[in-house]
Length: 236
Image (cartoon, rainbow, N blue to C red; front, side, top):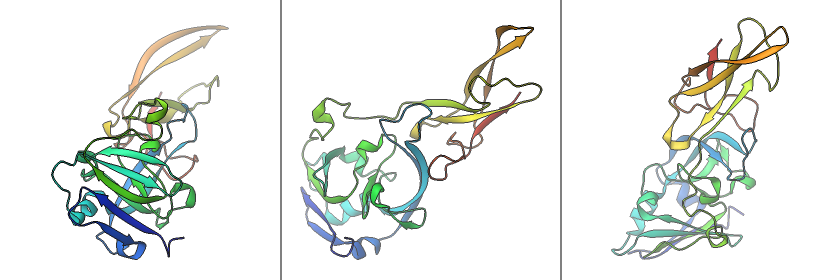
């Protein structure tokens, strides 16, 4: 319930905070377009999408609380008991957001209403949803999935897929090849691919090609989930 929800900032701070949703949304707002991917997403899967997120910088909230010396990490607590951690330098990075809106609307419940963490370069598991408390601590503590043996950094792995032509589709003449390439905050510079040519019932691999993304994200604008950024393509 957004009307009764509060965010507490505790731990190694000069002034603990207890912020209502109205108090949080009254802070200077930041808007950012970012792609978020689930760590369970397979290549070609739909557990990835891009949206326009609105919120406040986590760094601004921490500044208001006054981080004390000796702090090196923050611990996020969610209403469902989920716990995740983030190094203090990343928490204070201007790319780390506390998001309360998506595509101009309050966060959907599945995306963490009323507030979620939105960092960069990591899978969704590091971006806690349904946030209720931020605890500033002296050392990084293992979060829920880290305690199960998962990578504590959870960096997004580079992925690429071809959407057109379809798999095993036979094409003739000039054909546009397009798809998705994503490497989170590392960006995509070039996509390489190989053509297989068929003639008189025989096939052979021929020619390696490469294409640059149309736009910095390398993400296809298509019909998977929320609106996403521009595609890479190459006319062959």
